[in-house]
Length: 388
Image 1 (cartoon, rainbow, N blue to C red):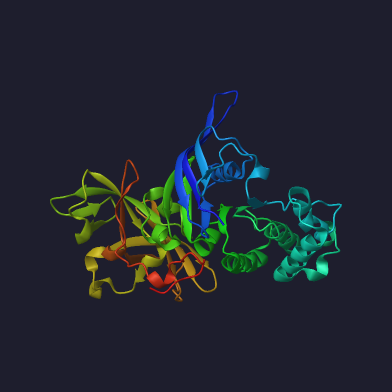
Image 2 (image 1 turned 90 degrees about the horizontal axis):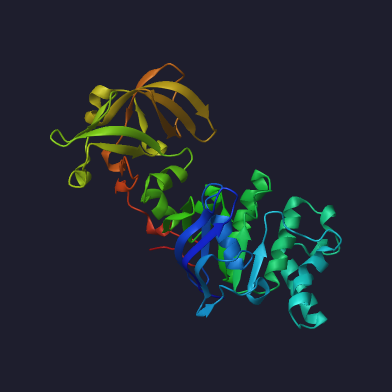
């Protein structure tokens, strides 16, 4: 196992139109045995960073270290890593057994019987003992993925690198494999860097998540920290489904209100001293917005907004309701039977304690939700939730 240090990592590509900056001075320390997930939209630099760690891409500037060893200029075979790819990368003419043992045969001096023993133990761990004599074309997608993971595990590396390994699986199998990967990483206790564009994978699997956009680091933290305390509007909007609502508001410091053409809300007391400028972006999670049946008797009448229902989206356990607020869209999520339909005019409650505020120009967070983060649900180094 190893501690991975990324020091001011920069990666540029040459193109006919000029250089393309894929990763911009990324700084990050990944602890020994930690499961870190890189997440962000396509083209954000997450896979490029992973390939730099693997040695598959040359670094334009900066440094990479495993513990105290500088590996920046080392070839991939010189780094004690194992990588799992999106397309599994299995040799079609080899059996599962041969695929799993091939790397050890090529890169080590281990005797054949020890290699076979490792393969057998790993196959048992992955539940694929009966498939070792089969070739990839005879295996399902999930079985191929297990063989690819087994091939990485038998090498007993210091660092696992995984590049969207579940993206080719169907939704049910992907959910199953998420759980299996977490359990596997916890048992092996190997430093793991996992790349995905799927926020569900990021939120459920990582000890910490690294949110990237445009080659730049946006935030590093536990999943719940990034969800409840987003560093900026991008992180707030990227994590969560449906995404956070954003409403542009004007600031009136004399009246201490946030307003636009459709509503006026008091500035939360916890944010009064931090609010400056004339324009902000109000953020509120869909699960924190609620429909109000009797606005006259509501406990927070000054935190109600009138809106028109445009679409309802029953999801089974929850219902998403999309509303129009003065030409802007607002979404709420409820696990109750709401009995509303398109065209209905309703009042919705936007609680002061749940409001986020962002600088309208820079997008930087000014105020977060006052909701406490439950320490019992914050993943620890084992990859599982730890009690406080």
